[in-house]
Amino acid sequence: MGNNTNSAKKLTLMSLILMIFTSVFGFANMPRSYYLMGYGAIPWYILSALVFFIPYAFMMAEYGSAFKNESGGMYSWMEKSVGSKFAFIGTFMWYASYIIWMVNVSSGIWIPFSNAIFGSDMTATWSIFGLSSTQTIGLLGSIWILFVTVVGTKGVEKITKITSIGGTFVALLNVVLLVGAVAVVVLNGGELSQPVESFSQAFLTSPNPQYQTPLMVLSFVTFAIFAFGGLEVLGGLVDQTENAEKNFPKGLVISAVVISVGYAVGIFACGTFTNWADVLSGENVHMGNVAYVLMNNLGYQLGQAMGTTNAVALQMGAWTARFVGFSMFLAFTGAFFTLTYSPLKTLISGAPKEVWPGKLGEIKNGMPVNAMKFQAVIVIALILLVSFGGKGASEFFNILVLMTNVAMTIPYLFLLAAFPKFKKKQLSGEVDKAYMVYKTQGVATGAAIIIGLLVGFANIFSIAQPAIDGKVFDSIMMILGPAIFGLIAFFLYTNYERKHAKNNKEMKKAS
Image (cartoon, rainbow, N blue to C red):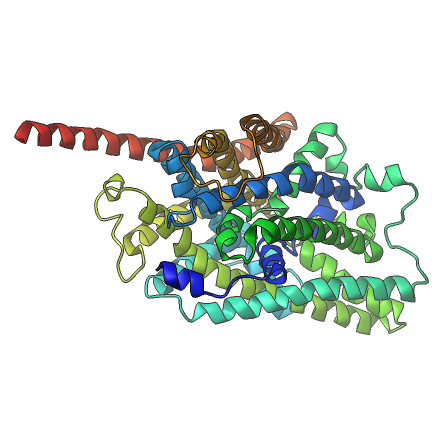
């Protein structure tokens, strides 16, 4: 196995940068951020890159380098640094974030589907069996989960083609956004749709009336951090990079700058062709469909700037939205089939088999079939709970996105909490020192605390704000998902420990 690794082609600096960019950069983050904060999102993205993205990525690089021969990924990192119970709960919480992701996307996937077919988001008008649009989307999401689970248990080899095609189209979306924005500005004689009257007015405040309080503005940090999500996978690239000691940190810093600048330029580009008050202030615009509304507007504004008739401009907008919808639908479909089994398989493979009740831990044909079926039941139950909870479509999607953001950032806290103990073992020679950025215990602990406080406070702000505004249900939903899975993990492992201790005791008596 070692020979295979050595003979395998190593990642060049450019290949590494492209891999990091593909893993972290998300197209939908730009229109969503512009919707929430306007140009005011840009400073928060830059700040998040400096105090979160780069230092956190270096930590993941150290983990990956020290435990490069371990197959359990995050589970192995935390197990070797702190202990099995801590690793299990942390990994289970990481898996829980994908449960929330599935709940989110199984409902949200119908927006790109609608845009691909109709050229706009028609989901607010959909109705089956006399149900409301929100309930209809929830029902369709449940059917989607059943479909993906049935196909996934039989294997997902054919889905990789859809994933690669979807990824290509999403990459093209970024080109369309930037080129289209430049074209609109040039054709309009340099005039921006969202004017910059002063630096403080444009970049330090939000045009969104819901993001006027300091507490709400600070809660946006969660969205900025979420935009840099996917860092956990970067540590695994260290041993696959040629001249890793020099190229890995260089690739990381370059990609961090490119991603940070890319987000900043992308958010600014949204304002060049979209006036916030005219386009995004309507009640029908929400986190789930804002990317399509904004890109539809790009096509329309480009047509207007070119001097076409209003009818032609509307068609250009509709076809731009169709392109976005088709691209995102393909990307979501490929990601869905992969994420239905991959995180679950990591959790089940890493943890002791005895942790799982009954036949839940069995792997058949490389797939955790029984666990996938049980997972489908949980996801469908959550979808129906949220969709039949009496909320409007806008609030429904906002709750799901907020639940995802909070759930996705909680695993960061576990990895950060484990880092000081990992560093202590590394400095004492218990684990590999081949790749080190944090040279002392004090620097490592300080960095972990600062990043941990940033992530923790961002989540607290996001959770507290709805309750302060009287929307206690929203705050409860944001806490409920991660809290339930944390408790399940704790009780599962505690039960395993009790049984394990009992078995050991009986074996000693027998001997």
